[in-house]
Image (cartoon, rainbow, N blue to C red; front, side, top):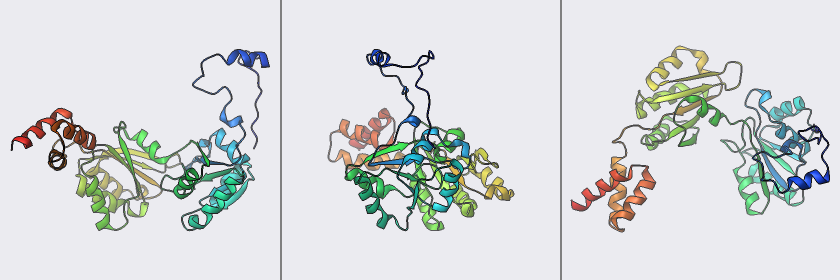
Length: 318
């Protein structure tokens, strides 16, 4: 689906060489005068193309243009992706690329790239590599000097974060928690003292168990943004303390269906990092000057400098 547009300027006049020359001396605009959607793909380039997570209208014009022009589209599920491509009228060659064949297929794709083919990597939905295959391909592409170009778009994790009403100045994406309860609780225990907001993808089949384990480890007062079926007909977005969220999801079976993202508030316990600070300081004060030790511990824990410095002085005197 080729996208073409008139080269008329904003005054309605056709552009010319002299007009182009007069623009060259102007500062570069924040936005390109020629949108990416009008540009041709480059040979030997790997494009990472975000696709809709439910609402087909969320695909960008640039994504459509790239998918229409590339030589190969590497897709996690070709049957699923074919429906999207058919809807868009795109007939580019489709190749399966998933966790079960990526070890074998990656070298072939890299050879194709080095031979001049342009390739787009897409996942079933959303941004490639975010809890989806592709790391091996992108990492090795960089290692072999192949140009890698992201074509941004929808990402469920970021969409959920933006709607959760929780702090966004620092956050981490934790992916899917372990399936087994013991490993899952241990996983949450390692995150219990984190100050930043945390984002999790959760299977609908384990949502109750996951929320209960979070409540056990994080406490019932910890606030959570619950996003289900983002951009789809039955989209649901709520924020409430874990104890309330567990009861709400248990009481409504509809909230246990579909794709889910949990955005968990970071720890607000002022005492939560005390043990970690002491542990770091004990090691560093044995090897480094006090000021340097404090500086490193502040970077590692995010604690206030004055508090760490005061604690370091106390430990020095003891």
